Picture 1 (cartoon, rainbow, N blue to C red):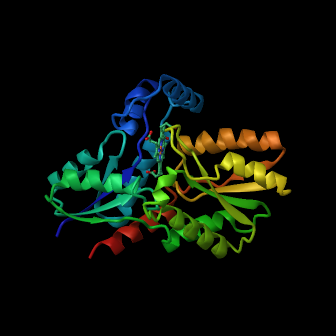
Picture 2: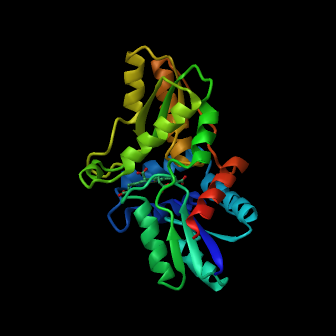
Picture 3: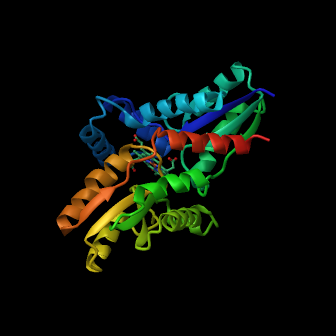
Amino acid sequence: MSDAVVLMAYGSPERLADVPTYYADIRGGRPVAPEHLEDLVARYRRLGIEESSPLNAITEETRAALERELELRVFTGMKHWSPRIAEAADAAVADGADRVVGLVLAPHYSALSIKGYRDQLEQALAARAELDFVDSWHLEPGFVELLADRIRGTDAHVVFTAHSLPARILDMGDPYKDQLLETSGAVAAAAGVERWSFSFQSESPTGEPWLGPDILDHLAALHEDGVEHVLVCPVGFVSDHLEIRWDLDVEAQEKADALGMRLERIEMPNADPAFIRTLASIVKKALP
Ligand code: FEC
């Protein structure tokens, strides 16, 4: 069989003018409140998106490195931007692939996140190629070890974080939260770190309750408990993007400053060669 990989990521607008279209895509046809759009544009402006779009550039770097590592064609598909997942599927089929590994650059499964990538890819392939989709890879040894290396030896209290989701996923029996805690526990154990906790981040104003605690409240609670130094280790994201550079590097940092706490965060895996080898190992395991 001829194999290819469709490597999927969330996607990011390339320039400020793209933000309304991008936000509309995320909302999937549901209305966008003008004040929420304004707020999002302001966040991207403060990030300097006019100069560069970190997520899209890092995803391309990751794609190219994974292709070299695997000696297989790798096509990028973005959930909310271009190249779309459907374009990646078409490109893989046009290139002659009859078996495709679908891998998302997000380690934890939820029906409200990874399933969306899966549905888009399945629909686009329309049985033109066999699909081996990786639902989650949250305990992949190379991933756990890479994060453990970044927190090992710290004297700070480690806060693991991931994107929040609407709290109704708990009633749906969704594995998301359990998987996040499993990754966090495994990373802490591998690093020999005993003082750690977990909090969510990046909640959206959608009008329903989201999973907590949010990192901003969590920092305040840690401060109350006498914690003075925090090392943030995002486990639910793998690259530098808005949720890292804004929600953590600006918002959480400002909160820590206001509380008089010291806050640092680990370097994201991005296209680190060790992370590329980990992605390659996940792909190899997915192939029969
Ligand atoms: O750097 C960038 O330009 C994009 C950064 C980005 C990543 C990301 C990852 C995840 N999201 C997840 C869930 C949701 C749900 C909603 C939602 C909304 C947004 C908005 C922006 C945004 N997300 Fe995101 N997400 C990123 C960016 N996300 C911008 C819209 C404005 C805002 O609320 O801030 C709510 C949708 C709705 O309105 O109904 C739910 C999850 C992940 C991690 C998994 C993954 O990467 O796919 C889960 C990166």
